[in-house]
Amino acid sequence: MSYGQQRPGSETGHIVVSGLTKQYRNVRAVDSLSFSVEPGRVTGFLGPNGAGKTTTLRMLLNLVTPTSGQATFGGQRYADLQQPLRHVGAVLEASSAHKGRTGINHLRVICAAAGLPKERADEALALVGLTPAAKRKFKGYSLGMKQRLGIAAAMLGDPQVLVLDEPANGLDPEGIRWMRGFLKALAAEGRTVLVSSHLLSEMQLLADDVVIIAAGRLVQQGPVDKVIGSMAHGVRVRVRTPQGEDLAKAVTALNATVTQAEDGALLIDGLDAPAVGRAALTGQIELHELTTERPDLEGVFLELTAGKAGIR
Ligand SMILES: Nc1ncnc2c1ncn2[C@@H]1O[C@H](COP(=O)(O)OP(=O)(O)OP(=O)(O)O)[C@@H](O)[C@H]1O
Image 1: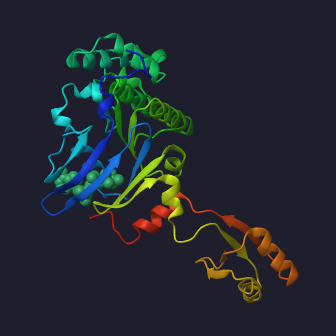
Image 2: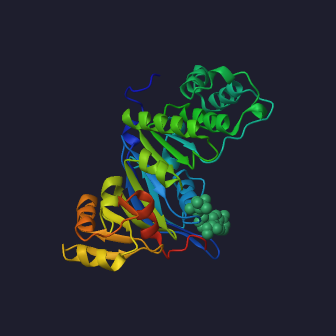
Image 3: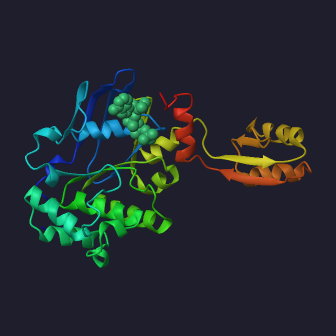
């Protein structure tokens, strides 16, 4: 089995979640959630703590039974997939393995149980860069190595779809960069990559699409650029000046709008930074700061989920 070629489960790459709901005794963890995930793209699954991300991913993988609704991979529920490991690989928490078992043996045991050829263990270990640590015992693995081993296990079946819950947790910057390159490469091969995270700056670098939920409900879904573009404000200029009133008057005369940030700075919409600088120069207004602020995923996320408490 080699990567990048047509895989047996390539028709399963389209994930559709429709009306998915999970009611625990007192908490509606997931509430009529519908979204779709496309092959060939990395989709970030975002939400505040307690929003229902893990519950949703567990329902996708048939680990939690939905109260209502369903999730399908190419039209089939996970439970109905003939060889699930060859269609969908999942990393839900940092890999756990028998402490005294070596990395390679851990993977071989999974291969044996799943009816996969044992060479896949070596291939998957190489894929995540763990070959040098193949014969080291799991108890000696760092957190980053355990995360990689978890991904290797998920890749054993050469799946079309990869589902990961907070895979960057506990990784150092080098590990995070490796993860980003790895997941982007899988998507570039045409695979579907669905990854939950609360690291928004990382998601902005990694994801093509995002699905944002809060309090169990869908808040926004779409390509990252479009979601960021849907912000109430676009690019704006941030200024600090001891002559706030004078500057506000000068830029308002140029049809800009001015608001005051919580920290006292002025936020100017409708003019770029050079234009604001020129207006200040003309009015002999002293500036202490002049910067361009671009909306980012973190700003959008906070705006979209504001007031929708995640912890219920
Ligand atoms: N087995 C369970 N029994 C009762 N309530 C649960 C159970 N599992 C999750 N919940 C509740 O469902 C809600 C959603 O939890 P979930 O873990 O899915 O959120 P999350 O978005 O993954 O959060 P986090 O980012 O903090 O991991 C929370 O209020 C949680 O307390």
